[in-house]
Length: 475
Image 1 (tube, rainbow, N blue to C red):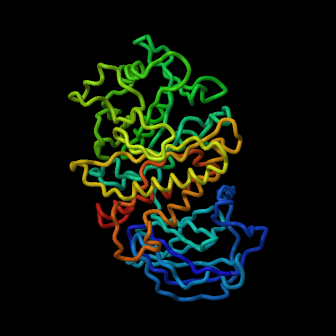
Image 2 (cartoon, rainbow, N blue to C red):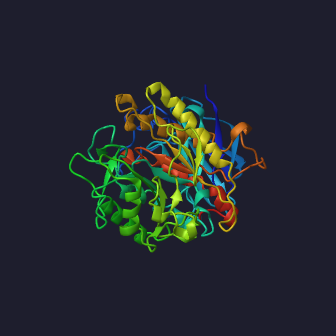
Image 3 (tube, helix red, strand yellow):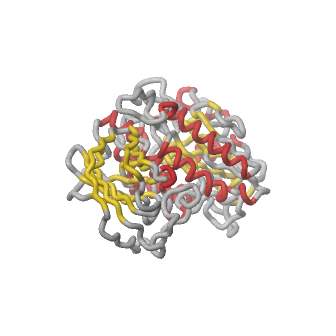
C-alpha cells in the first residue's frame, strides 16, 4: 500500500512543493527494485562517478500543488509515494521564496542522498535530499562545501554549540588487525569531507628522554598498521597543511595515551608541551573557545593527566580542555569540559540496537542546548557521542560490521526524528528548546565507497544556528 510522502525541511529557508510528476519505473537492468535509502541497502553504493542514471520515459501524470514547508518543520502530505507500483519514480519540484526552483527524483537512482537539480540559473542555494523509501520520507538539507563548511559560521559561535563530524581512532585506515582498523579512508580525506574532530591514541617512544618527540600511533596495545609504525608527527603535518590551505576551519584533537611500555600521562603531557603545541598552531587554554579564536588552529582536548608543572598553566587553571577521565562504557557521563556517550562494549550483535538507542538519546541531549554568544557564560560542554563499539572476539562486532548497521540507522534518525521528540510532526511555530545540535559525532568507517551521508547530515544540523545568527542560509 502506498504511503503519503512526508517532507522535512532541515534548511533555514521556506520551501514550497509546486509540482509532482510520475514516471514508469526504469528497467531492472538500470534501476534495481531495491534501490533507495534503507537500513539494509545504504552500503550498496552506485559506483562510477561518470555514469549517468537511465533516462525516464515521459511522465504519465503531472499534478500542480502548493505545499509550503517552513524551516525546521515536517509536513505530512496527501501525495501517494506511488500509484502504479512501488518502483515508479516521483519527481518533486520545489520553489524558494526568492523564486528559485529545484527538483529531485525519488527514490534516488544513484546513491542514498542526491543533490537537487537547480532549474533556475545561478541559484542562491543548493539542496541535498535523503529519501527513506519504506516510510516515504524526504529530508532536505542545505548543501555545503564540506571542505570549508565552517566558513559559513560566525566567528562568535562557541565551538561547543556546533554539530561537528568526528572519527574514532582517526588514523586507523591502514592494513591492520580487523578489530584495530576503524576507518575506511585517510585522515586527509576525512578532513576534506568535513570531519573536524580526530580521536587519536599515542604511545611515547622514549618517554624518559626530554629531547625526544617520538609518539607512535596505536589502538590499545596494537600498532595501527601491519606494515610498520606510524608516527604522530606525520599525521600532524597533514593536519597543519590542511588548516593552512583552509584557514576558516579548525581541528579538534582528542589525545589519549595507550600502547605497551612504561610511559606515563605526565610524560606525554611534557612531550606535547615541549615539542608540539606552539600557540601559533595550537589552542591549549582550558576554556571552550569561539570559532573565531581557533580558525586555522588545533584545539587540544586531553584524555590524559598533567605533569605537575602544567597544572599551573593559564593562571593556575591547568592546560587544555579537560576530558581526562569520563566513566568507562558510559551511556552518559559529564566530566570536565565534556558530556559523553561512550557505550563501547557491544559484546553481541543483538546489543547493536541498544547502542543505536544510546546514540540517539545523546543527540537529543545536545539538541536541547541553546548556545549563547561566545562571550557569555556559562558555555555548554562538548557533547561527545561515540558511535564506535566493538568486541575483539566476535567478527559480527568488529568496528566495520557495527558501522554497517549503526551509521545508516543514526543517519535515518537524524533525518526523521532528531529534535522532534514527543511532538511527532513538527508544526510551524512549535516550541523549540535548543539549537538542534547533535554535538560532536565520533564515527567509524565513514567515507566507505564514497558514502558521506552521515557527515552531510551532521553538518546540516547547524542550520538553526545559522538562521539565528544571520537570518539567512549558508550563503
